[in-house]
Image 1: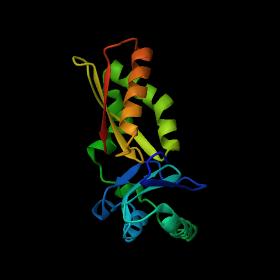
Image 2: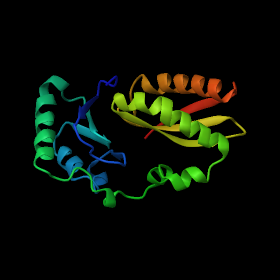
Image 3: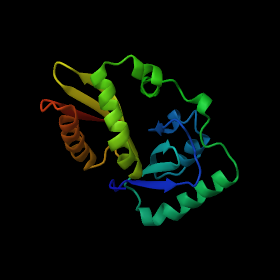
Length: 187
C-alpha cells in the first residue's frame, strides 16, 4: 500500500460484507482472526473488508522481517475454516449504521449524490490500496464534505492530502459547485 506502515493481504474468497476496523484488541469482538493477529507484538491495527485484511504495524520492525509470518498465519487460519468475522457480532456503531441503506434514504439529495460518487469513483481505488473511505456528512451552508478514512488510508502520510484534493476536485466538477471543500478524518 502507499502507507509504509500497512500491508494488505488478499484472499481468494469473500471474508465479510461489512468492513471492520479494529484499532486495538478490545475492538475485536466480531473478529476472532483480528483478535489472534493482535497477539503478534508488532500489530498495531487491523482492517478487514470484502476479500482483504490490512495490517498496520508498529515501527519496531520492518515488513521484510514479519510478512511471511503474518501471511502464513492468515492463510492457515482461513484454510482451517476458522471464523474471520462474525457479522452478527459487529457492534452497531454510528459508522456501521451510516453504511446501511436506511441511513442513505434519510439524506438530502446532494449527500446522496456525494455518496454515489464516492462509492463509484473513489472507493474502488482506495480499496485496492487496502483502505476504505466513507461519507460522514455534508454541510450545505459551509459546502463542507467530511469523509472517514480507514485501513491503510487512515494515518497514511499522503492519503489525507491526495484524497482530499482528488475527491474535492471530483465533487466540484461532478456537482458543478466550486465552493465544495472536503475534510478527511482518520477512522
